[in-house]
Image (cartoon, rainbow over all chains, first blue to last red; front, side):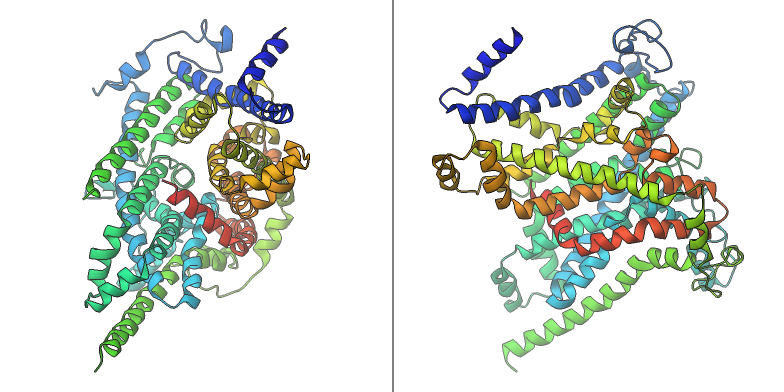
Length: 331
Length: 283
């Protein structure tokens, strides 16, 4: 019965086509819709529903585990997120730390990334074609490495006794240096934990290649005549970069900034391996927080609520960023 | 002095300045790799030395022998696990992306626009939104600690469909209609006419998908908790936590995990760069 109704529907959908085409479309689109329903829409809705329950896979409940051991709590998770007092529950305090650390991380990463990649792309574009590729490859290499390996490498560089960084500093100062870059919570610069800076460095080192290749491609898209005209007018290196390249590349820069920010918000691998959120939660980014609550402490309802907040945060920031900069280049 | 000779001089000066910055910068960029590789050839005694050396004083291959002989670290199995997941996902994602990209580019049907917008909006939703329920579904289906748990939910890539649609739009309709007049079936047309036209996109997106799967960490970490089904990134962190004090062994293991595939990626770099450029310039 259901089958015949479905066939009727399909027949009406694909009216006006020959039957072979209809069959082909029906055979391809119906599995797609079914698959998406099960593996995308259903988990999405389930994830939203979880946020309204005190859900833990350890408890038993009714349909999908809801109810009974996993009671409905309404907006309680979201309300408690607004509890900024000192006696707020631990998960709420950790959530606030997560938001703060993630924002700080993204605010550090995005400008630093652009400040390095944009001039670097310009420099690489300005040299001989034969060696251009070599430099691009060198700077792109870390993108291809697994971030876990990158984290282990950098963790060893920041090692207090055996690390390369302390050895280099020791070489220059002539003293034995034993700074615990990743473990000493008392180290801060301008109120920002040094451990977070260390992670920013490792993250930038790996992530730079993306924007670099995007900027190189965009630079190649700038017509040679514009560059020649500027050169004939006597523009120097800096004028060329600041007055011509950057304004022409504005749409690409904006897009790169948004993409960099979105991925910075979702940082996990490097942090989990290098510090696991420490010292004293100073690098406890939001996704690590979600992971810990969902899969270490099994408080999935709470973690699902945090995921929703994180999604809204990423979405609204990229939305605002796009809007703001869009008006700017419409002169 | 003519205008052109002035500008030529300025050009050479600028190029020299570029090298002056680029060469040290690329050495700094390579430093972590060098540090990892050099440390993997040091003895335990030397790795514990304070202050540390940069180039090993006593060059040894012992660390590699130990890592490869370690019965707790059957690297072959983990290489195989990583390869199964990455290859399976590349094949299925290339198939679905090209097929649906082609359909969205060349066919009209009711609900097409809505479906396409729905797919596009999925690209906006980060993975962590479906991470928890995704895990619960896999648990219900008994796919935790099963490589299929990383393959079955990954069959559709919205960005892939979007990308292949862009490429398929440029395939001439006459070509498809000619095949239809000749009596070719629709799937035959997709396989024999459309797919070859999408060749470069297949290479680009395939490499990108392989790389992302090969290097993936968070989702495999959640799904694969038993040791023998783990993938290389997870086993690498597990091993480094086991050998906290023997950094020389960790570095040798890291080299064995990172470098072989890095070398392969380097060979196909052109396609990966192209893929990233496409995804970056799509907006």
